[in-house]
Length: 358
Image (cartoon, rainbow, N blue to C red):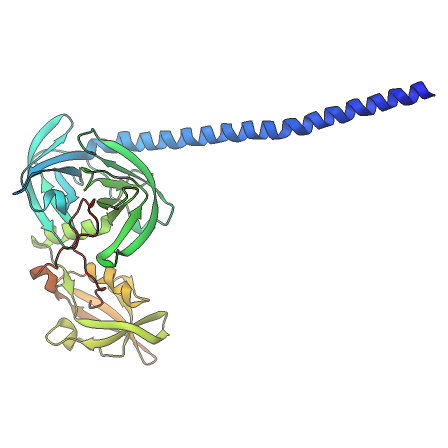
């Protein structure tokens, strides 16, 4: 009897030991599987970025030039097959003797458009060129992955993977003229004007300047550059527009908006448009207005000479007025250039207070 009991006890002990060993192996296997999954995930991301880089780098160019102070260098990219190049104003805005390197060639380039208000310069080479497809920054959100492709320092074209960190209207107390993308991509000198592409290989922005710790950068939305190019193609010049109505925060919102018209400036398009102080602004063109600062983007995309539908609420009545935008005062008198960072790559045209006068 005692032998039988002892045998049972030993059997139970062995079973318990096997069970303990199994429980010990489970977390080991889990860690191994997790590490393998992470390796596979990193490998997949790496392959995606390499594919994007290989497809897009052919349309990215290194730009050389000079100004009265020194030689210039930066990055640009082709946006049509006839040799048209987008780059930053700091690269192609005020220099001369431009040339671009791509596909093993170095070709002379000339300026087509320079616009300090947006920070855009457009160059041209007389050659057939590869192009980058245009995407939409409006479809992105915080944490959307993006890739910048530029020519840092004296190095060859280089990809940098990062995430969209925010959509900002101001930096260090200064307001942009349109919302900029804050991107967790560490850019270097020489990468101003680099394209920022989404995971489809579509351009969604252009590198504007690096933040002071070099850990991230600001990029101009591609829609802003396209606005400048559209003006040039249609009119032969950039036509920043404005209406001439001042706004402030309303005490009581209507129709989802707190943007109240407080003043109609004399001798402006708004003066005889039908707009009145006290109107709550709902929409300017295609852009909805919810807060007074929303007018920053709406104003940037106005084009002088075009009729702009403006929708307001007056009392309980919704009304729409077609206003013909005039040239923005800054088109004739560019604002003083502010320098928020010693490491910036683009001399930004910023302002201390938000521009709430569409």
